[in-house]
Amino acid sequence: MTARHTSSTSTFDPSAEKLARVYAQAILEAADRKGCRDDVLDELHMLATEVLPQVPNAQRVFDSPRVPLEEKEALIDRITAGRMQPTTTHALRVLARHGRLGIVAEVAAAARHLAFELAGRREAVLTTAVSLPEEQQRRFVADVERQLGVSLAATFAVDPALIGGLVVRVGDTVYDQSIASCLASLGEKLNRRTINEIQHGRDRLTSA
Image 1 (cartoon, rainbow, N blue to C red):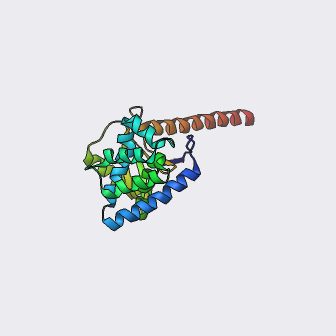
Image 2 (cartoon, rainbow, N blue to C red; image 1 turned 90 degrees about the vertical axis):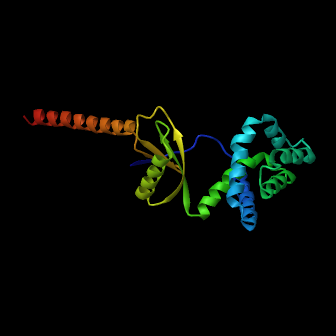
Image 3 (tube, one colour; image 1 turned 180 degrees about the horizontal axis):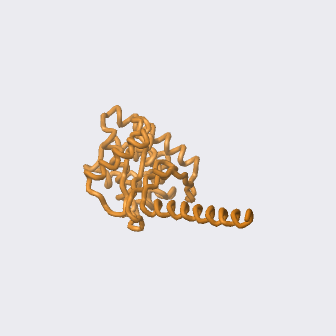
């Protein structure tokens, strides 16, 4: 498995990231006291990745400092009522009161990351050329965990551009086992061999 490090080209605000982690820590502690950590994590993740992207007006209300607190709390109640844990609703209300509801996606991501850290797991994205059945996904995850010697919280992605194989991203490190990568590696080896053979032939001519 070939490893390479990558750097993200997207911009981020380190202060917002740090602030999100502070709120995430408080939310996890509150959820643990109520015994509903997994539910709260799933609900925040769903809110950030499914609900808000589909309801542009909700994102606008969350982001805008001009929208009164009462309107934000009313929207929170409409989104969460009967669907989410009271701890999740309370967390969103706290963010609203502190004027931080606009970073709820960052808080959700930080909470998941922190929960994995506390459990001694690393987040990973495994990319394949086609969608895999769950049993095969589990085998892939187990194999990668064995090779890397870490416990993974893995999600799967599909990239049809891959020529088979598997690409694993853990943090900023990418482990590439795709056929395309193997072909590229083989091409590099063949190029080096050709260059060496040409150089060897020149050396023989020179010595002659």
